[in-house]
Structure formats: structure tokens, C-alpha cells
Image (cartoon, rainbow, N blue to C red; front, side):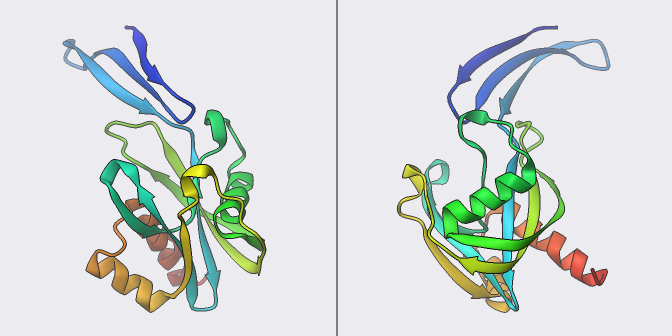
Amino acid sequence: MSSREIYANPWMVVREDDVRRDDGSEGVYGVIDKPTYALVIALDDSRVHLVEQFRYPIGIRRWEFPQGTAPDRADVEPAELAARELREETGLRAAHMQELGTLDVAPGMSSQRGRVFLATGLTQGEHSRELEEQDMRTAWVERSEFEKMIETGAVTDAQSIAAYTLLLLRERRGE
């Protein structure tokens, strides 16, 4: 079977694959290839650090945990990418970075996977945001308030909600 690149830019590739299903029938599958992203839960006692930015595809601003990929679809070691994203978007530096797990963004249409990290021992520095992030806002939010933001729809980012679940499971295990 064959694969064709339909579109590419510095952030993603869209490809179309000819596929043969288990029953022998043939079909076409569209796939969005994006590099692995890192998402960082910056935790300071009972507070988490959020960023708010405009998300063009859905046309609204929304709160989420700092997250992103390396420029030009580069393959960067996940912990290094996590530290870079945290510093770039918030200015925070973490003394400790612990991986919590892996998330699949939209496995029905995208190959992109994410690595979730917990950042602690935080110090504040200057951020170095990309052009698209210049209107980004940041805030420390009590965890109870973050949970209310999820319940009320103020936080709808699936990756942030899933990442928070990974944190809750880790804490429940007593780690």
C-alpha cells in the first residue's frame, strides 16, 4: 500500500495512506503527523500554573497547562522539551521534573503523542514566548479552583484534564 504527503508546514504533515482492512477491502486513511509534545504541570503546594491563550482552530481563548512541541518538527528528548516549554511560556524553572505518563491526542486522526511532566522546586525567571504566544497570560490557580474551572467549562483542553488525572492517580498511590 502507498502513502502520499498531502500538505506540510513547520508544525505538521498531512498524509493520505492507502490501506487494506482485515477483511481484505481497500480504503484510504488521512493522518495528521505531529511531533511528540510535552505538557507540564507546575505545582507549588496547592497551586498549579496555567497559561491562557487564543487557540485559532477553535476560535477562543482558553486556560491550559503549558505545553508544546519543538520548532520545525524537531525530535527533542521529552524532559528537555518539557523544561523548555515551561521556561518559554511561563518563565518558570523547575529543580525537579518527573514524568507522569503519555497521552494520545486524537488517535483516530493524528499520530501525535504527549508526555506529561510534574515540575516542582520552581523559580521564576523571564519567559521567551514565540510570536503566536505574545498575548499569552499566566496565573497561579489553587487546585480546588482549577477543578471548578474544569467543571464549569473554563478549562476544556483534553490534554490538561487528562494530565491532571495522571497527577491525581500518582497522588492516590502515595508517590
